Structures are given as C-alpha cells and as structure tokens.
Length: 127
Length: 351
Image 1: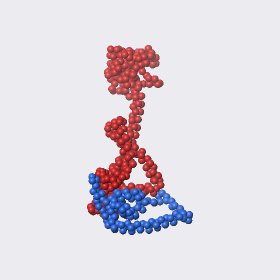
Image 2: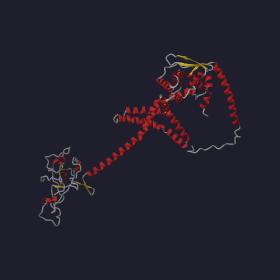
Image 3: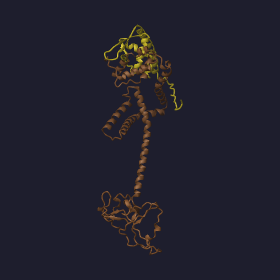
Image 4: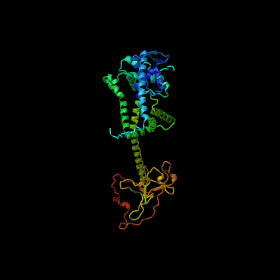
C-alpha cells in the first residue's frame, strides 16, 4: 500500500508527537520522523504542517539566529497542542485497533474466503 | 545538530523559486511559511548523500497543501494564472502520459525497454556534443584535447541522465530542449551524410570509368600504341591526321602530359608530332619516338634530339583493287574535306 497516502492523514499527530518532548526546527522535525521510520515523509509537507499547526494555535514559534548561516525557525508545542495531541492519539488508537481487528479477522480465516472472485481482465482499448 | 553553514547559491535560488511560486499569497503568509527555509534546505543537502532539491514549484505546492492554503489557480488571475498553468503544463502532460502508458501493457513494455536503453542515449549525446565541437573547430582530428572533452562530456551526460548535477529546474528544461533538438537533428544529419557518401561514391565510379576509357585505344584487349596508314596503292603514309566520329583527335596515349602512358616496350618514348604547336600532335600518325633519356622528368622532350620515325610493319600493303594506280593519297584533297570546321591543315615537315 502507498504509505504516503496513509501518512497524509496522520501527519498532524506525527509532527505533534515529534516535538512533544523537545522543540525543533523544520528539518530537525523531518529528521526525527525519518529516524522513527517514516522514511517517505516529504520535507515541504512537514514544514507546511508545522505552519498550519502554528496557525491553529497548537504551536509556539521562535527564530534562532545562527552565526554565519541562515537563521532557524523553531517550533514548540503549547498546551493547546498537547490537548490536540492527546485527542488525536486516542483517535488513532481507536482507529488502529479497529483496523487491526479487521485485518486480523481477514488473515485468520483465509480458507473460508472461498469466494475468490475472478480478477477482471481489462483489455487494451477498453477505456 | 550540525552547525548552520552558509546557504549555497543553489539553495538560495531554490528558496527564491519557492517564494516566487507562493507569490500569490499575502507576503506575511509567505514569510511565515518559508522562514528558515534556507537553513532547512542546506541541512538537508548536507544530511542526505547526493540529495537533490528537486522542482521548486512542486515543493511550493506541497508546502501550500500541507499548510492548508489555497492553490494558486483559485486565487491567481490573468497573466499570473496563465503563467502558473504554463509552468505546470510539462508536469501535467507528463503525469497524463505516464497514466496512459501504465494503462496499456504494450506501452508499459515499450517504456520499460526505452528506460533500459537510456544509457546508450547518454553516451550518444556526449559523442554528438564532442563531434559538433570537433566540427566547429574546423574538423580538428582526434587528439588529447578532444578525447579529454569527450570523456568530460560523457561523465556529465551520464550524471545528467541519472538526475544528478541538475540543481535547478531550468537546467532540466534546458537539457530537455537539448535532447529534443538532438533527437530531431540526428536523423537529418545522418540523411545528409548518406546523400554525401552516395554522391561521393557515384563521382568516384564516374571518374574512374572515364579515366579507364581515356587511357588510349584498345584492340582485342591489347593497347594500340601506333597506327600505320597505307594509301590505296599500298604505300605507307606519313603525317596522317586521324579524328574520331565526334571530331576529336584520335589519341592513343590517353593523357598526353604523362610519359608513362607512351613509353614503349623497348624503352623509347612516343612523342607528339612536332609540326603541331603546343605538343598536341598526338593524332598525327605514325607517331615518332625518342630514346628515353631525351625526355626530361617534366615530360618535355629535348628539342636537339630528332625523333625516330616509326618503322611500318610492312614496307607496302596490298593495293586496293579498282583504284587508279597513278593517283596518290595527297592528290585527293576532297576526301580530306572534313566536316569539322575547326580543322586547319598545318604544314607538317616530313620526317
């Protein structure tokens, strides 16, 4: 399955989780997500998400100048952000347990799935 | 965390392109969205081996989408909207093509094949650039410089082909344009070459055949080196001028400037009749000859040497029946009255 599609729906909670313990700047957050295993996360998606969470009031932001180089914009989670994270964590757990149950059920009894519908063959020029 | 480094020109240009793509948004919004972008991009380039920045337009769209901001086509108007659409057009077309190819198994196979032979194109591309350069330098031969250039072109071409060393979108566009031009020009150039080669071949064969036909006169496969004429009474004639059906002097030696063609088996050299100016008396028979040492290397005959008259094969030939034995050949000028007006009888000394 294309995990980038799955990622779109959970990027908010993933970003919130990545900075819940420590503030981070854009690429820092990307790196944390990739280290955690979300290899396919797009840089710009993370930056845009940070910006949107900030606009929604879930994050604080501050700029740290660096000597000789371009400055960095750090994001930190605030109280509203923590509430959002807790809420979305619950949502995810409920959703994932439903999905797990559904997927376990299917894999547990593959034999009964005898109604193996023939794969429709699409011919050239049919569409 | 690695220390911040100075943003490279590539990063600065990329960030500027991203901001430009977001230019339809309020400036504050753009600033908030792209603040610290240079630092992030620089770090990313440091972090990932051989990382590329990619397409700034696509990057800006991803940024905009993730931030929950409106897409440009909705907010842009007039020329800006058209321009943005034009910039996206290649991507749109490419996406559409890709989708179509994926739908057809045959096209999928073809696409897989073409992708497999891409390296051949990369090599050809480098060779073509090198060939054009060599041609531009006046067809300079293969030497150290051109070989070096060829190797450099090969490396760059392959790296480009692998998507490396192309930090800016405009470089990709330029490469695409180059590829298209080369793909169109190659068949034309090859066709031109084919025509040239064919022409050269036909010229070769034409000239060689004309050379062959001009090398003297053949009889039953052997070279005719001299002609002896006898009159009706069978007496040998001297200073007989012969012409072919077109009025051209009948010349046995081919190229009269070449001594080789008129050297006889006994080493003597046939010379033109001295009575015709400009050494053009090659059609006055029988031809006389001089010893080989009387001819200089440039073909000029030592004027002090008197040419030896060729000995006729027969002292006399059989008289032709029914002719007046008292008449001589020279006494019938009407027979010599040639239809060729350019023929001017010149006084010829008797050898």
